[in-house]
Image 1 (spheres, helix red, strand yellow):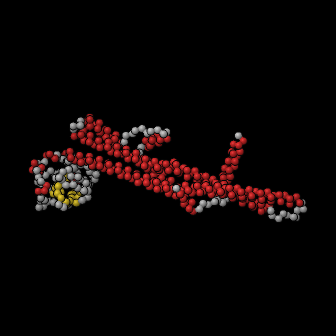
Image 2: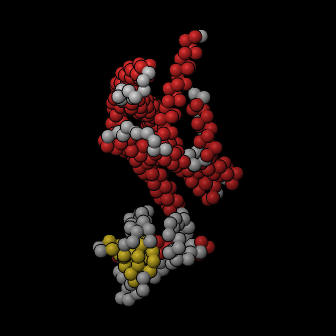
Amino acid sequence: MDFSVKKLASDAGVFFSRAVQFTEEKLGQAEKTELDAHFESLLARADCTKNWTEKIYRQTEVLLQPNPSARIEEFLYEKLDRKVPYRATNGEILGQYMLEAAKEFGSGTPYGSTLIQVGDCQRRLGGAEREFLQTSAISFLTPLRNFLEGDWRTITKERRLLENLRLDLDACKARLKKAKAAEAKATAVPDFQETRPRNYVLSASASALWTEEVEKAEQELRVAQTEFDRQAEVTRLLLEGISSTHVNHLRCLHEFVEAQATYYSQCHHFMQELQKELRRRYPNSFVVNPRSVRCPSFDPSSAVPINSLSPEVEALQIEEVQPPPSGTRRAKVLYDYDAADTSELSLLADELITVYTVPGMDSDWLIGERGNQKGKVPVTYLELLS
């Protein structure tokens, strides 16, 4: 118990000494040991790394899981070291609803069969999203969190210790300075005008005491300087390790980009397959128009099924079609179109082609020419130019 009381008293004294030194520095009444410029630059770089890593980490969390309640739930499960329960993605839920709706409407109806196709695609998109979320969490979020909760906490702890040792060092410098000033005053030539020799004896005794105090202060300063230098070196090594952190985060960033590119590539592939299938089944009624503001008005009720074309047009060979003497126009392609068969012409967004119509051809289609290539093209994918 006696040891604990002594230690408590000692710690309280150290804390008080640091508080006094810190307050005097803020008031400009005490000197402060400045760190070298390189060390200061390392500190600034470390703070910058921590701040931006934290912002990137938080925003990536929002990107991967926009629902704040779900993020809080995942955080709690992680802190409790429990497995996060299975949670279906929005795409998987939407796909499931569509498949259930198809059963109600009848899978043999056009709407029901289309719901099955689109629902299956949505489930595949949801599965791709789940894989992307898992990959990103492992390859990108986890390393950032490990830095914030591991390396940065260690750096912060060592920096705090370094600051305390700096306060101790400056307090020792201040005590030594005061002791030397008192010693100089005590060793000054005594006033011999006073006839009592007792004053001279007291003056000599005080000088000896202050000399002893100076030696003690110098010893404490040497110890404080040694501890400060040792801690400064430890902190410097940790701060220089930020460069390795940047290299590690760079690798993780590449992996995150790869995961994101793979995810969007899968989504694009799934949607292209769905578009092709729907165009094959409903070539005139299914049109995906990402630029609806530029698309000519289209009345679905006026769409004519492909099997309603006249036998003459069905039997028409595209190679035999010749442009009329007059009536050809230039057209700008609004968005990509993949030909469903050899009679159609594939299109690329923003390209210019020549179009015209032939007698007996469905009004939703035109003949398009691009160089020596020729084929049917849907009107709704074009912007006719004057």
